Length: 193
Image (cartoon, rainbow, N blue to C red):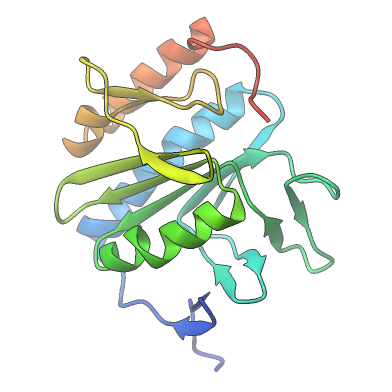
C-alpha cells in the first residue's frame, strides 16, 4: 500500500486512522511535542520521539504521538532494532485523542499497561479533557492535578504539566511552568528506573 501514511497494529488488527484535524490534533500535538522536547533537552539520559513506529510485541505496533524514554540501548527497556525502529516499553507515552478516544482509553491503555509503560497520557481534545495514568502494582491509576492544576511525572523529575494551561491551549504557560520546574529539579532527584 504505497499511499498509506499511517497504520497501527492493535491487538493483531490493522487500524488506519482518519485524517488529522489541525484544530483537534495537529495543534495540540505540537504543544505536547514542545513540552516533552524542552524537558528532554534539559534532562540527561532521556530522549523524545514523535510519531515514531513503536514495536511493543508481535501483536502491537503503534505510532504514538509522543514518547519520552531513557536513551534507547540494547539490554534496556527500550532499544532500536536493525532497521532503526523503537522497540520495548518507553517510560512515558502520550496520545492526542480527537477521534480515537475509545481506542486510546481502552485497547491501547491495556496494552501499554501490560507491556510495562510507566506513565500514559491522553489528551481528549474534543472533550477538553486530559488523563494521566501511572503504573502501580501492574495497573494504571489515574493521577489528578494538584491545587494549582499541575501534575509532576513520577518517572522524570521536574517534568511538570500545567493541565489547566494545556486545556486552555496556552502553550507559553505550559513551557513556562516546565522550565521553572526543571530549573529547580522538580520534587524528586534522579530518574526512576
